[in-house]
Each structure stands twice: as C-alpha cells, then as structure tokens.
Length: 347
Ligand code: UD1
Picture 1: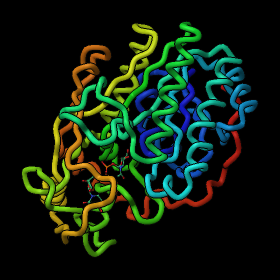
Picture 2: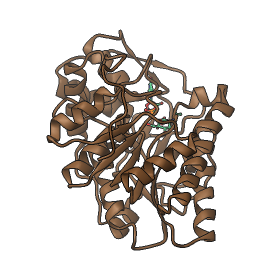
Picture 3: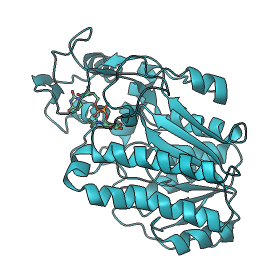
C-alpha cells in the first residue's frame, strides 16, 4: 500500500493514476486546500480501479500515524505542499508551517509507524539563479524565496534523517516545469484564481477566457529574448515517481532532477500552442517578473543512470494535452463540494 500526500492535486492525481495502473494499492491523504476530490473520482474512472482517501492535514501527526498503520502503508510519496512564490513572500510563516512543519510531522509519523521509504517532491527552484546550464544535481543550492527555501530545508532535514538512521530509503525528486494533462482530457491543472504559471495562462487565453498573455520580458539573453524553461509533461513526471519507487532500495538517499534537458522559450510555447489549438494567443510584452531567471533547464543524466527514466513526451504533446483538458474543462473540476467527503474505510 502506497500513501500519496497531495494525491488530489495536479501532479498527485497523475501519480495516483500511474500507481494504480502499475498495480499498486493507494491511499491518498490530502487536506483539499488547493485541490478537488473530483480529480480522484476521475483517476478511478480512467483506470477502473479504486483508491482510498483520507481528508487529513499532514500536521495532524496522530491521524497520519493511524492511517499509515490502518492501511499497512509501505512507502510514502509526499507531494503535498503550497507552491506560489508571491504568496510565500507575503506569508512566509504559513509556508514554513504547511510545507516544512507538515513534512516534519509526516516523517515523525512514518518513524513511529516504522515506514521508512519516502519519495519527496522537491523543485528546481532550490537551485536559484543558475550558475551554469544545464543544471545538474551538484549545482549549488540558493533558493531565492520562502517557497523555495521550504523545499531546501525539507531536503536538508531528510538528509539529516538519513544520516541518523540509514534504514531510511529516500528519493528527492527536483521537478522542472510540469505541464500538460492526461491524454483522456479528464485530469489536469486547475489553478484557483489567476494562474501564476505560463501554460494555464496560455491555455485560458487561447480559450478566450483571458484577453491576452503578458510575456514577462523579451530582453533576456536568449534566442528570442524571452525566458527559457524545461517544460516536462506531467505524465512523464508521474512515471518518474514509479521509477523512483522501483529503484528506492538501490541507494540510501538520492536526489534526482526530473526534466527533459531541453529548454523552450515563452514565444516557442505560444507558437506551439497556437498551432495545436488552432486558436490565436494574443500577447503583449511586459516587464520582467522579479526573481525570474533568463534560462533554466535540467541535466537529466542522473535520472537516466539511477532510475532508468527519461521523459518521452514532446512539446507538441504537452500543449495538445493541456489544450484538450482546458477545452473539455473550461472551469476546471468545478465541484466546490463533493457529495461524499467522508473518509473511506481501510481496504
Ligand atoms: C515557477 C516558479 C517556480 C515553481 C514553478 C512550478 C516563479 C518565479 N517560479 O517557475 O518556483 O517551481 O513555477 O511550475 O514563479 N511567463 C510569462 N508570462 C506570464 C507567466 C510566466 O511570460 O504571465 C514566463 C516567465 O517569465 C518564465 C516562463 O513564462 O520565463 C515560465 O514561468 P512559470 O510558468 O511561472 O514558471 P517558472 O517561473 O519557471
């Protein structure tokens, strides 16, 4: 039995689907602060298998410990967390509480329940301003905002934990820019309010929900002056978790980039999206966003070596799948309350 924290979220729901498809039993723990339970209904509808759900906050250590024991959990995939940089600047303590304290409570509960296998969702944001490209895992760590620092401090805590007790097996996965959606068009990113990230904005502009995209700077030292990122299909990110689970016992603790190794500019995204959707993406040029870097993309060699994992999906697929999701779900999951928000009985 695998516990997935944040399993109702954008990446979490795709990870749950990959686990169920691979034959694992899954219990999701999610406080639904930034996700809808509908995503889990859809996961189960797509694969025809069921999972269990517990609406628990990670800081409730006792409830987590009980869930670990009740379900006989053998490994935890920890994806729950807040991830908006601007919000983290305004409310750093809320971020440290939710992300850092939440993880501290989770691993304490795991320790009590003697569950010592963990995969943690970190982010390329821990690298800060790239000193060189592509970024490998030995690049220096200098996150530039509270959100990034919560990820960094959690990583350090997990390394300390492993040093203290090497029965733990831990994989830290540093995601680059997950985008796209499941090819069914049933699962995808459902940001609340105005999205912060590029792809949801581009998709909403293509749909006509927003008038135009503001490209945040076209004077970067890049091929066309716009920012460059390593966009990776969310289904590839999900398969990276399965590979990490398979190879978790190979080394005590590993830290691995999940990226494609290819940089794509904002303008290239706009052009690809226009061509797959057949809809224009009107855009203007605005000021650079504070804290943005010109270019950031992964060296994914270690993931290939340690996890036997590589991304497989093209930029066209990322945009096409994102578009299908947006087109079929113009209001995202749009089910503010789920009729049966009751906990499931243990399997
Ligand atoms: C952002 C976060 C990062 C987080 C990641 C998760 C910031 C500064 N960084 O990364 O910590 O891990 O999301 O997906 O928020 N852009 C526009 N117009 C827009 C929005 C974005 O031109 O309205 C550009 C940005 O300047 C950037 C690119 O699109 O060049 C990607 O932006 P975004 O999707 O926000 O991702 P990151 O900044 O890489």
